[in-house]
Image 1 (tube, rainbow, N blue to C red):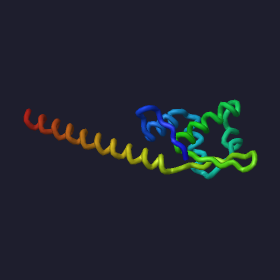
Image 2 (cartoon, rainbow, N blue to C red):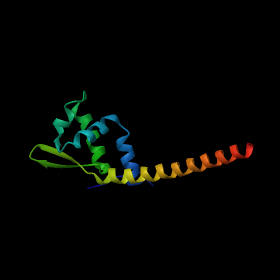
Image 3 (cartoon, rainbow, N blue to C red):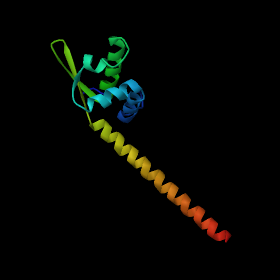
Image 4 (tube, rainbow, N blue to C red):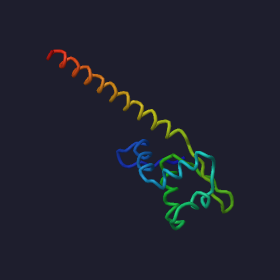
Length: 116
């Protein structure tokens, strides 16, 4: 599975970039139900197939999906690992901000107590 990232970027940057587009997020959501062909994935979208396949290419380059071609049919599958890495990163951010907000809450409480 090839991963293309920008200069100085990371795989996480690539995942964020891929998920920044609503069409690609909808494709990822659809693939949580199981593998699908290009035409099945493109069906709900009002766009030309070449434009839609560019979205699939971005998802594949980010590592979020993988594809397999049999004859003329290309089937896409979700790759969960990049989403797991994203979840780990988000959990760390959430923990950091919860800790900071708890510290602020404690500081404000102490200041209020000093005023009394």
